[in-house]
Image (cartoon, rainbow, N blue to C red; front, side, top):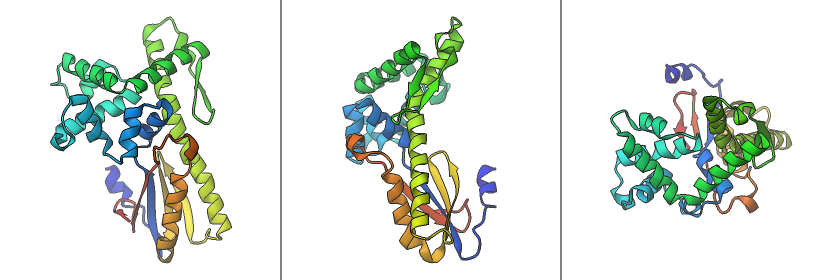
Length: 254
């Protein structure tokens, strides 16, 4: 239904809807913040992160990774960042997955990406000690339940604390991009031709005059990709992808 509804958002005459979204920004931020050399290598080499992780975790050459193995790696990749335990991982992999198998995947992941594993442990212990976590840019999030004597409240706070620096840094990045885009549009006197109308997670939505698309979209993409300081990116590129169409539900890659 969401996809059908999105088609009802139609660009005005002579304009087009342009959506520019970050590619796997949470995983890229995790690689940067943790400094995990294997995760950094994947992004520096421009590999498909889910296939590359599947190859390393399952011990199979990347050319032999099938769709199901990639799907499982994707579940693990995002599950790790959200503090997913073995039972939640098993459910997300599919109820038919034995608990022992899910545990095996989790263990293999952490044995492969040891620096990322240590980073997540450090975030958790720091949150317990300080009561908050910080994004790369210094924005804090406090966790009231992190020292609770009630196990499920404490566990819930720990899961949120694990993800907060990563997801929070990604949120900071897109806000910085929005400020810089706004500045660019004003300085270039493009406000009548390019309208930044919406942010959805890691995506910015614009209305762009059709005659300006070739000129403006590469610049918008560049601004978004440069929103994180290059000196601290450890060689991990931020990548954004642009799509265009007459309505929000029928966009095609530029």
